[in-house]
Image (cartoon, rainbow, N blue to C red; front, side, top):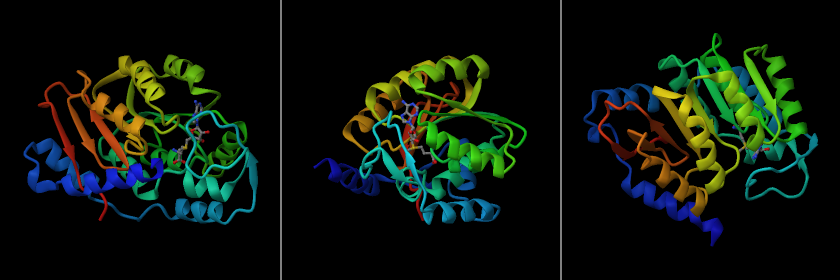
Length: 262
Ligand SMILES: C[S@@+](CC[C@H](N)C(=O)[O-])C[C@H]1O[C@@H](n2cnc3c(N)ncnc32)[C@H](O)[C@@H]1O
């Protein structure tokens, strides 16, 4: 039954999704047409090569699982190819994060859950002059991500290793204000809300929080519902793969289920 949960959720999403014709606010209309729907593969060739290499890698890593894992995780030794296939953010969603950061000119980025660092690099390429803090708890995975950051010369990424339950406080001492936070680590109800509460004091009116896998499980669905109803959240967008939260108090409180995939 647990495996079918996202399938039912997707059917619901598919039935209720709307597009630009339902959007009246100029900000949201622009955000949807110029950012969410304006996908392009150009500029990501090097990252596509990295993804292909990881998907065909024969290497295995000893993984320490600190989060909810993925449905196909099996044991502590995992193939890099399986991690790249099952744990990484889909490239279409990574490109969306890239567009949000580039077009909204966001500079201080916090990512919970680095994995192999592919998504971090998509975000880094959108703000080469900014600073990206990314948190990963599994040492072998963190080592692999660092190799990728070095290979891309991405020296504005700071990887903080350890359990986010402890390292998030350490990261927040360095950030002071966060323009975009991407929560993609511990896909459970309680940690999702706890991490959000910890980050909240550093958010400003133009900040965006992105929550991954909002319909992956009943508890993530519940966490998403609670977050979009949070009094500080003024606008929430459900794209199925992830949810976007906005904090501008000038926005009328609204929630949209938006068509994202082509
Ligand atoms: C879904 S993956 C992240 C994928 C990544 N955003 C990407 O696109 O490549 C989740 C990662 O979070 C890490 N993680 C989960 N719970 C954690 C915790 N409590 N502390 C630190 N890392 C954690 C896992 O080791 C895993 O590498």
